[in-house]
Length: 164
Image 1: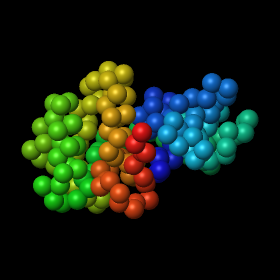
Image 2 (image 1 turned 90 degrees about the horizontal axis):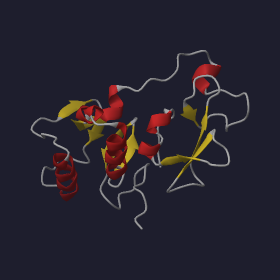
Image 3 (image 1 turned 120 degrees about the vertical axis):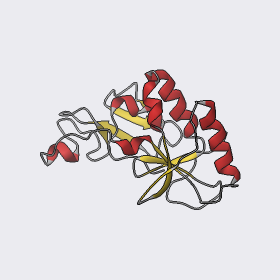
């Protein structure tokens, strides 16, 4: 699965990561534990996979003296899977979003395609935000730090989580 290169501690659960009880500086993915791990940077505290969690090691941004990663507006975008308004996958996603009070009358568009702005989720408390993103992970994949709807069975760089 494709995940953002840098994840803040409060975002770990949103992307399906859990902190390893044996090593609190390591977070493993709950669905694909052998494929994905993130390690906490000693300097900025952001989680990345760059140096494999060796003691005294830093993320690439800190190692190259760049400012620490910040959460951007891209984190709160949900890209559409296609332009077909009758797409069954989009209808499921829109019903889910309407349960959270989203008005889907206007969809944005940028260089990556059409998207739904998820910024109203910021107003929810942290637990509700995590619950929202964990449910969203059931039918979306990570795409350029945002989320993207994918048709089930489609061969894409990112994969939908395995259903149990």
